[in-house]
Each structure stands twice: as structure tokens, then as C-alpha cells.
Length: 351
Image 1 (spheres, rainbow, N blue to C red):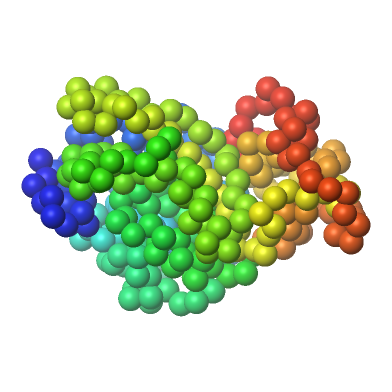
Image 2 (tube, rainbow, N blue to C red):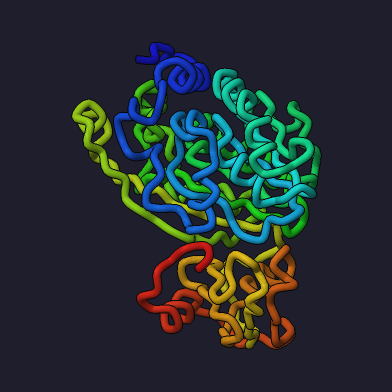
């Protein structure tokens, strides 16, 4: 068991570097993937080195589509599982950067770098792993507006300074770039006396953000509209963990947010979007979030923020947007609009 109660960062490094030897050592499902990943990811996972898979900790599948040729940054990359998946998806012209504070994890990832380079048929690696802290990406050489997509898989909750992490993310993202991550969120603020508990920290619970505080942090950083893709409750079956923190409900949530100038409410400008079906992984259906699921060639009424997410990002060439934001019709109920068109459909980033 980790012993360092005074320094949360060192406690987490010890837990993931020394205490945990594989996913079998975890006491809750918080740091384990819930549900099967999309088919396109499952196909790649078959070719990932077994040791990388065995030492992987994550609570979702935060890998969006349309990554060919892009630069992707993985925060808390661990043994490199998601980085190696991304390596395949960005192709030989793309680039993947993994950042992790735990040297043992970085060492494991680097040990299998050549294996995956050959596995994907590349002449040279398109992945680099850097040891460092996600609160200070500048120290590991990540420049302003240099990254197309930032992902993270159940890691941001481990940071003692989450607002700094999100500030760094929006610093390094290009205009129109995307944050796409899975993490643990709480239905209330964690009692202060539990926030430094080594076990609860390592199990991704006591560092979980209260979901409303997450919204407030993003708003302070100029991101006024984020989207939820999936949400699932986390089961706590360990008696020690249950005794300490069982009064709080936790959920694993996959979220996307864009570096765009958006309004803090959905507004109606009479705009309509058509998905062209031109993303290879999503030939028929594209999921923007849990209430915007676009069927190829079928029109959908959208708010101004959604129009921006589709027309001012890497998705622009895949959508046709009808209407300019020059005549306002009042507030737009995004959730009702989406639900009426996609009721009972299974949610996944691509179908």
C-alpha cells in the first residue's frame, strides 16, 4: 500500500509505479474500462503487446475519429496503450506524444515502441514518450497551439491542480482543436480529509471533480460548452473503499470540448447540418455527443455552438451547414432536438 500521505503526486506515482503490478491489483472499477470499445479500436487492440495491455489503467475509450495526419497528445499515457492505438490511427504522417509522470510506466512504453512501429509497418516511430507532469506541459516541450487533439484516460482526476491542467490543455491546442477524455466525476465535492488518502487517490476516487466544478473551471478558461458522449456509474465493491467514500456517487464520463469561441447557452439561428458520411470510421452515423447523432444525408436542426463545432474544426469537410448566424430565433433546446431524432439508438463515437 502507498504510504505517502503528505504529497499527493508522490503518492500516485508510488501507487502506479510500485503498488499496482497489473489491472488485477485494482480494488474498484474506476480505473478500468467500462464496456467494449468501438469495433475499430477492438481490431487494433488485438495487435497491441500483451504487457502494455496488462498494465493499462483507464475508465473509457477516449479516441475520437478522423485522426489521419493529426498531432495527438495523451496526458497520463502510462504504458502507452492508447498512444499505440493512436499511432495506428494517425498514420505515418501523424504524430503522437505521450506524457506520464511515472518512470516505470514510461520505461514499459518505450520498451515496446519498436514492436508497435513494426506492427503498423512504419519506417520510423511516430510516437514519443516524455516523462513529466501534465500541469506543466511546457517543461516537456509542448508548444502553444501545436496539438490537434488532446486525450486522457482516467488521469486528470489524479492531478492536485486540475485548473492548471485544463489551462495547459487549452494553451497547447490549436484553434478548433479538441479535448476528448474519459474520467471519473463525483456528484458532490469530496471531503477534504479524503482528498489525500493514498488508496482513494490511486483508485481514481478522491481526486474526482464534482461535475459542476468541472463546468465552472472550463467556463473560467473560456470554454462555455462541452459535450458528454457517455456516462456509466462506477461500482465500489471493496469494503475498505466503501467504508471510506461510499456516501458519494461516482461516474465514468467521456467528454469532448473544443477550443472555440462559443456561447454559454445553445442559441437558435435556424441552422441545419448534413453529415456527408465521409469519415472512414463512420460511414453512416456520426456521434457528436449523446444527443447529436447524425445520420448520413439526413438534415438536423442545430444550435450555433453545434454549428461551430462542426464547421470550425477538423470535421468541417465532413459536414454541410445551411444557414448563417445572422438571424436569431431565441434559445435552442439541444437535448430535445437530439432525443427526438435519435431515441433508443446505441451511443458510440462511430457506427
